[in-house]
Image 1 (cartoon, rainbow, N blue to C red):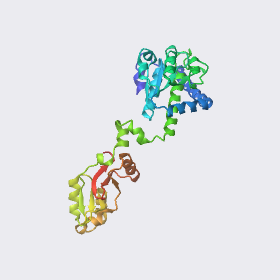
Image 2: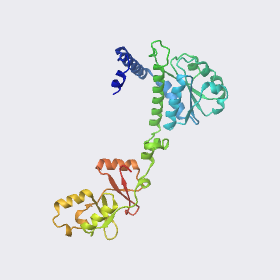
Image 3: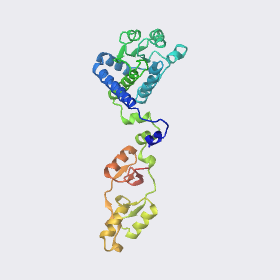
Image 4: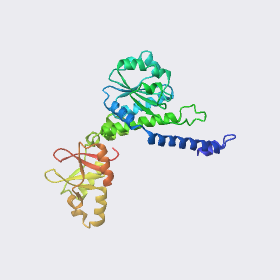
Length: 327
């Protein structure tokens, strides 16, 4: 559709050199990532992870320009995966925002050259505060690297930019290192989906991982006794508008369930419907869920069992609700 749209524009064509350039850039950056993975310094990376995991305050990211944008993303990833973090602009920090930093904080300073003036100006103050520093740079012998407690080098030969000027490969590598650190910390802390959901309570993810069945279940459940006639079963299912009815014994205990499918099968095989009771039609020992079950577990069970609804039970195993897969 998009090709048809653009082809109506005067002089439109697909320059093959452009596509070749895109592929070349992607391959160059993929090669740079492989080179980085093959040449990381395990001592410095382990030192960085130790500093991050033992940090009693915040892991603070700082960088200028494109490095700053990447730093914001790394900080956001850390914060959402259990590592308290925020970004501080180096120029703003030098003009008062240093007051946001406590001695318990760890700084990750980003500069591909390791000589970014705004970043270097922070170092004396950080040293005076007693902060530890991790350098994210492409130059292991740079000023930034010499003042850092751990140096994570990009191992980059050149930018993808044809002029070797615009931050391209360097930003990809920096972001990848940030992701790798965050994931390593998640694994070290055994960060689970429920932990992740605590920091993402909004949207479908938070709903699935934080919500319990009791929060969403429908509390009005069609029910009949095992002795109910075929006509009574149909009336209850029709009136309940749930496509099913719970079947209880004389003591009120759940003993079965009748669905629309059970009714159709009864019509096909029973010759004397006038004498049929709920006991004759029901599916015994239906699958149920305790009301404190997480909604994500309920959805998983319904998908595995290929059913769209489940009865919910209380402490005494009595039916207290009904949950549907799309509730």
